[in-house]
Length: 248
Ligand code: IPE
Ligand code: IPE
Ligand code: MG
Image (tube, rainbow, N blue to C red; front, side):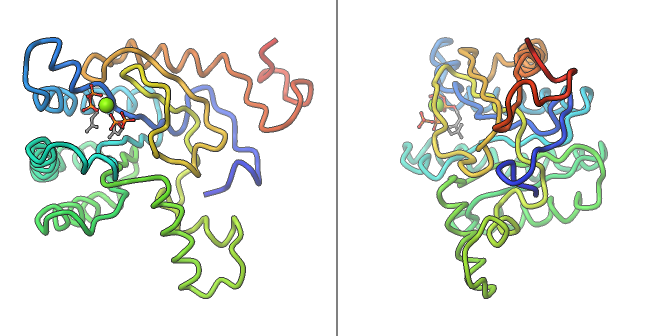
């Protein structure tokens, strides 16, 4: 991964990498007088549909926040349901991803997951490793601070004498992926909630009140259209940009 603070990434009209905080499942269910977990179930279907939209549009990387390090604080039943949903989708949905040439990756601290989940993740990653289509990365038991610290610790363990961007970059969770071009958060909150703290340094941010289960292709297109109006200067002045990238 090249860092946006070291080099200006290539400019593309369709974001190469989209990162999403899929928020609002609980409120979606509550509005329908359903248990919160039904919102998570619907949210998983939304993710499947949106992944297909991203493939059609030519997005190369989609990274989604499924479970944060802080989400362990939720009621035991809800955490249990989410873990089960994760396991089931690893068992039942990965073959379809593989047939569609997608690459699946999971980032986060695996050590707290049940052994079946850890095995399911390894199987899914190995099965799809050589695929050449969109890379779908699921952030599970993920936290941005955890990510930075684990990368620094790995760099130290590998003998780095000084911690620099270059020494830490290879160990960050998203590895060789370009940094996200567009960040989307559904559900109305305007915070990062400890998602990709390092990698979002120069990402364009987009917040919407739509609840995640209601976020479909038209909403994705709106986010991309907003992205297309942004002038990505990376520290430069507007006049320094190529004419086709200047917005005013
Ligand atoms: C996001 O939806 C999914 C997870 C955090 C797992 P929420 O469950 O946070 O939904 P709201 O914010 O309560 O509506
Ligand atoms: C962020 O959503 C994490 C995921 C979507 C997985 P939360 O709903 O947990 O975020 P906060 O705690 O309200 O910021
Ligand atoms: Mg929430």
